[in-house]
Image (cartoon, rainbow, N blue to C red):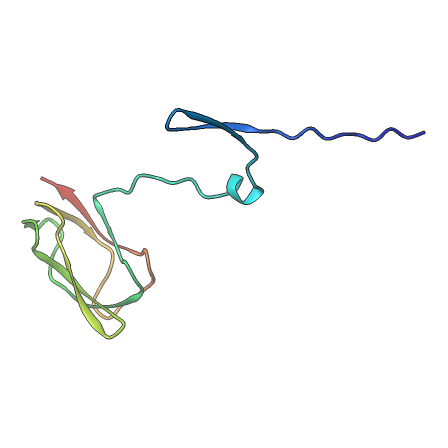
Length: 111
């Protein structure tokens, strides 16, 4: 007579506000991309669109709030501004270029 093999489930322990829980993670959760802390020196596009104008050059020093470029998205001209006082390291876009969401547009460096 063939024996039935009983598969033992693997549970992981998580702690939320001092409460201990045992759970079984789904395969989708296990295969999820790992979250990384965003690099504050990289300026990414927040939506797909076209670059209308680039107002800066590499090596240029800017103050917080200065205009970096104009991104046209959904028929709106979005003024992308400097998040802090810093310097332009590298420009990855040019006027007229169509870019997708999360495209690296500029590299900057805090002063």
